[in-house]
Amino acid sequence: MPKHIAAQEQHGLDLALQMMAIPGKSGEEKAIAQFIVERLLEWGVRDAQIRFDGAHRRSPHGGQTGNLIVKLPGTFRGPRRLLMAHMDTVPLCVGSQPVRDGALIRSADPETALGGDNRAGAAVVLNSVRDILCHDRPHPPLTMLWTIQEEVGLVGARHVSLSALSQPKLCFNWDGGAPNTAVIAATGCDHVDMRIDGVASHAGAHPEQGVNALSVLSLAMTDLNHNGWLGLICKGRHSGTSNLGVVSGGQATNVVMPRVEVLAEVRSHKRAFRKRIVDAFRKALLEAARQLPSSEGRRAKVHFSSTLKYEAFRLSSRLPVVRTALNAVAQAGLEPQTRSCNGGLDANWLIARGLPTVTLGCGQAGIHTVEETLHVESYLAACRVAAVLAAGDSSTAS
Image (cartoon, rainbow, N blue to C red; front, side, top):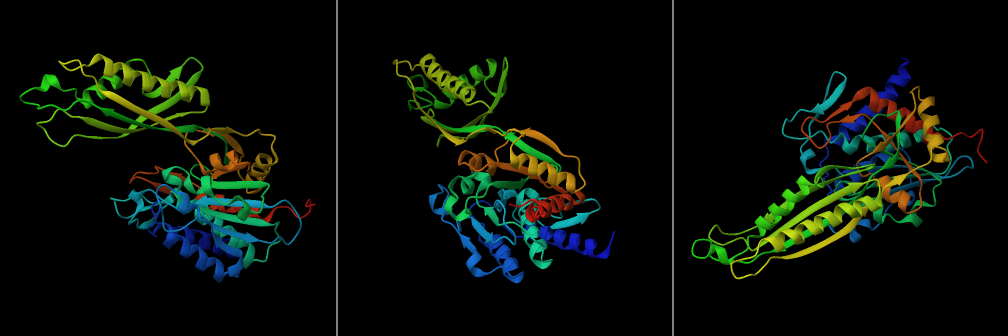
């Protein structure tokens, strides 16, 4: 390998290692955002080209900072391109000590995840800026976007200021997966809030006069599980998933539990099928409450609501953004592929807001666990793909 190429790859790898070591769980992205800004200024980006929007002020989680947006004027005319990745990590990544172990990078601290999701993606986008500016490469108008709070519901992408992005026509997002694979479809997700108000009574003296809220939930979950509405769901040609993620209730052992609160989610690529799953949850809870009266005929009350977290999408393989992504993968020396994803991506909200977005991977595996790794060659391949996409093609520019 020529020395200048080896040096470029080492620069890109160093960025990822440095960025994975910076704490920055969802809502606490200020330090990683500052690191990115410092590198941009070091490479010649002007203060006026860098801004933060107010997405955190619209977030239910609050937060230290908004999305980081950088706009570079093109050296030739052409459709504006957006390159993006999210800055935040899950809490398990705080304290990561990234070290190289042969072909992989992992955390030296066995109690933490690595943070390749998604500091690797954020580094890929940042490295593309370095590649352009430090090597004076021609490029079309570019917008770089580093989003906040992806891990807690795609908050940054949902609330990003579209006017600040300057109407990009081709949008590319980096997240988990292989660098040669373009995600052109992803699932949708509904958030479900459930509250069961049972009937309190003394658990020793008169338990029969109470209605245990947890018993109502348990009966409903048994029904859902028995009828195939819990976990992996397959009904004919339709499929989806459901999960109870948070359950809380009760304060004393001598009181029949009067309340249980549950946070759950439902996923499917089909909006109508998600509604069927949500309706199954609601009906199961109401039926369980009906079946478990107290000795005095009192029954639990069910409070139930669902809200959209993000909608599913499917991009046509004929769209310019998809063709451009796959061509860039080929130019980087990889075999282009497409796939559908059962997780949520920032692309879900950008597409919903009118910006066709293809998501590419950069070699993360075992994300959200202490076994997380980053495959070095896949990450470097992702950097090559991003460099091609950032540079565009001046020979065919309008």
